[in-house]
Image 1 (cartoon, rainbow, N blue to C red):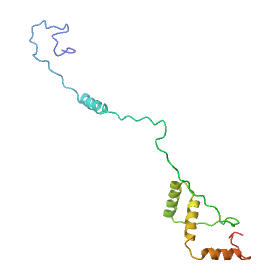
Image 2: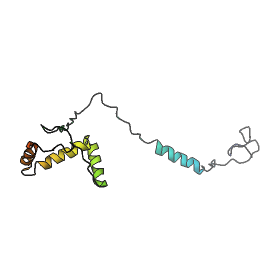
Image 3: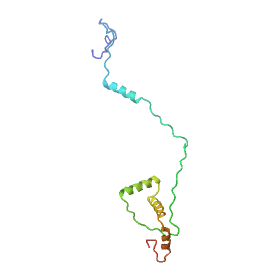
Image 4: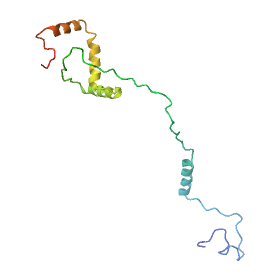
Amino acid sequence: GFGAAPDAGDDLGWNDMGHATPAEPVASPVPPVLRQREVLREELSGPVAVEAPPPDRPTASIEIERAAVVRAAVGSKGKAAFTLRLDSARHLRLRLASALANRSAQQIVCQALDAYLETVPDLEDMAAHAASRPDSKTDMGE
């Protein structure tokens, strides 16, 4: 009946009517949701990765290479400014290189310019000759 356990004879727990009791109790089917819960429980109860505690002190030393500071040439009186126009791809790469090297774009461009100017033959002689002329305006802005 309603509310009675399948293997119980009656509400008092014994069979007072004399009916035959089943030889083996019939198991009620497990609902799918309970089977899914069990599968999830098994999946989630697996080994958990444990984070190692941070070391008390650094295990390796890291040496940071400082970039050389580009200074103005000896004898220069000031700075001249100009606009450098770059296509968007070069501009992006210069900004990324600046961020990666932890140096300004100006420092990177000045270093590259200095390296290039060292390869131009007779440039130093021409610059010295131009700077020695009294009517020379090498500062570009004066």
